[in-house]
Image 1 (cartoon, rainbow, N blue to C red):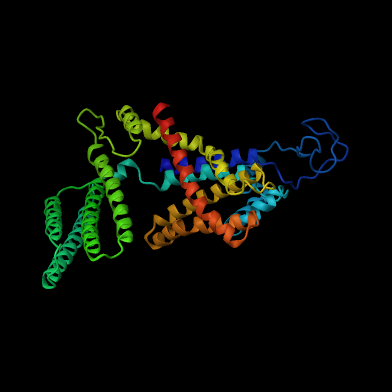
Image 2: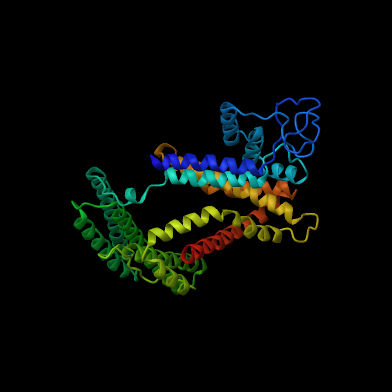
Length: 426
């Protein structure tokens, strides 16, 4: 419950900060003819001071203070209701209109970005499971259902391998010996699964078992591709497609092995400290060393990283702007300001999409919708924003969207490195 209150507090704080950044668009307070501004002393003409912008009439009632608070949290002077629909359905038009001078009609990119950062962290703190929930013991019915699902999956894989082996023998094909090893592997998985039956399992145990099953299936796929590759080479058939798929699966297996090591070895010891196993990745030496230094207090490390991501989320903007500039550097009419507006509105949409998808994924009835939105909405949104904001051709917007998708992953990687560094060294 306290997490929910913290989430509400974050949203309110974010709105207040954003409204402080965002200038007012006007109000309904009437002015007193002939009076002077209470802030700077300038003679008043109209509802606002034409020098400093303060309203002609100020309040000193608790009711008016409450109205200002709700107004700041939910209203943004009405501009948010003009901005957010355009941000979702026609982001290119919003970006272009703001760049070309229509500022008073819309919430500024930075103000909306700041509010969305607060909103994102507030929602994730509310919907994401806590450490206690992750490590909670699975109830008996759920554990039984999970056991039966895993058992059915393994038996199905064994049956398929045995059927393939019989077919290969019947057709007098060679190179099926690898199937015996994979059948034995799945039988060991079945035995290990049987040993877990009846035990009290935590959610982390279930996750570890699922990862082991995925690794086993991936190993089988690699063995199958290796056999297909040998057969294709022997028959003189093209092998490029098989080789590409094989390399991808090998890379995926290596990544899963590293994750499995971390899951298996990154556990609390009797002394309350965490053990750590080096991960074997290119350039991982520095990461291993930093992780070892932080391993004595992983909770503190996670808190520092979360706090750094919260405080330095604005760094995504300067990190991303140069990548967008690369897509248009030969078109002199576009300035760095234009790219900054584009990036800020785009990042804001991506965070809002993540928030909506996270909430949808939490419920079984809308889980698929949330996943599909998270998978397909970002490239579509980038395409539409590029096409209309920069007035490119459809093809020009498409290839830039493809390149920008890669640039976005690069920018996120750089931001993640920044956050990890701040977390470890902070």
